[in-house]
Structures are given as C-alpha cells and as structure tokens.
Length: 285
Image 1 (spheres, rainbow, N blue to C red):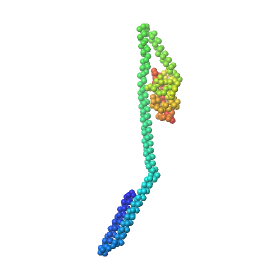
Image 2 (image 1 turned 90 degrees about the vertical axis):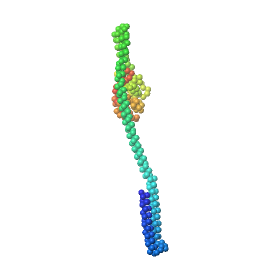
Image 3 (image 1 turned 135 degrees about the horizontal axis):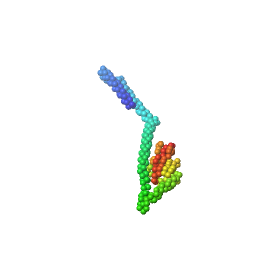
Image 4 (image 1 turned 180 degrees about the horizontal axis):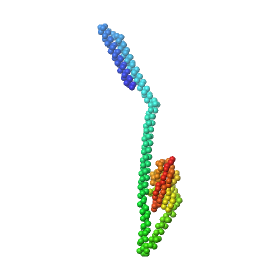
C-alpha cells in the first residue's frame, strides 16, 4: 500500500513539474521570438525552477512519510500484540493436536474392545472343545473291565466283575474328600477353559485373583477376590488374568476396582475344573 502511494505521488509531482516546465519554456520561447533575442532568463524560467524545487521537496517528503509508515508497521509487528497473535496461532495448533490425540485414544480403546471380544470368542470356542474330553474321562473305566475278562480263564468272570464295580465308585467317593476344602485359590485360568487342579492352593502365599468354593463332589463356584493387591494385579493385565474366566459389563481401567455381579460355575473333569459359566464383573473408579 505504501509503495503504491509513493509511486502515485512521485508520478503526480513529476507530471506537474513537467507540465509547468513545458509551459514556462513555451512562454520563454514566445517572448524571445517577440523580443528577437534571449539575452537573460525571464520570470517564467525562475518560476519553472522553483516549481521543480518544490516538486523535489514534495518527493522527499513523500519518501520520508513512507519511511515513517514502514517503521510504524515494523514496530507494530514487534509489539506484544503481534506476539499474542502468534501465541494464539500456536495454541490453536496445540488444540488441534490434542483433539487428534484424543481421537487416536478413542480409536485405540475401540480396538482394545474388539480384541477383547475376539479373545472371548476364542475362549468360547475352546470351552466347546473340551466336550470331547468327557468321553476320554468316561473311557478310562473300560480298562478296569478289560483285565476282568483275563481272569475268567482261571476262574469265573462274575466274582471278578463284582469287586471291580465298587472300586471305581470308592475312588470317586474318595476324590471329593481330598478336594473339599472350604476355599481354593487360583491366580488365573491356567488351562484352556478352566483351572488345573494342581494350580489350586488352600493357603495362598502371594496375591491370588480367584476364590473357588466347592459346592458338591464335582461342582464349585468362583469369583474375583476382594483383595486390593490381587485386583491391582488383575487390572495390570486384564486380558491375561480376567478375560478367560469373566465377562465384562464395562471396560476395564488401570485405576478402577472390580465389582462382582454374579459368580461363575465350575465342574470337575479329571484334573481340571472346567468353566461351564463365566463370572460377570464390572469396573468402577
């Protein structure tokens, strides 16, 4: 803007000076022609020179005014208001970056929820796989009748089969006596679809996440313990400690507490307590 004004003023002064000088020369030429000689300069010549000087002074004043305007603009740029504008621009960029970060966090949480659902689906598939193990448990008794036919070669098969029948029943009756403490503790579901019998303890010497309560010869319920230290351990990696044995009613967070909604159910199958119903839990701050 200032450069355009300077150019316009300069062109205007030069145009005026040129027009005045041209008129003065025409007048001087006319006077000399009438007088017959130009012995000395006339008043118009001095007037032209004065106007040229005034034009030069006006040009200098325009230049000085433009310089003052530019210095004022530079001072305004260096003033605190200019820095505040830059700070506002930087703060706007920081705000946009924070919004992008929040969007990324929400996407990450959504991906974690999807991953949790996929793990639950995998565990559900694993829960259905142990069903063929029931025939394996049921197939273990047939070896006891097989040796029975080998003995009838010496005597008869009936007296051998009669004592063989009560033997498995006695073993089945004695097994719950060994596994009927009031409470059992487990750190995590260490086998697919349940807890191994060898991993359970009656008196824990470290934080245990699950408490198992036998309710019958081959049935039990389980829940997450109320111990704060054990809950912090479970929340440090909920997918490893909780996902295989629990269903979530809300999303797990690091600084939250675990609330039991309903206990899970177990069934003894050989050397494993099989999860037939997962525990329902939720999380609160």
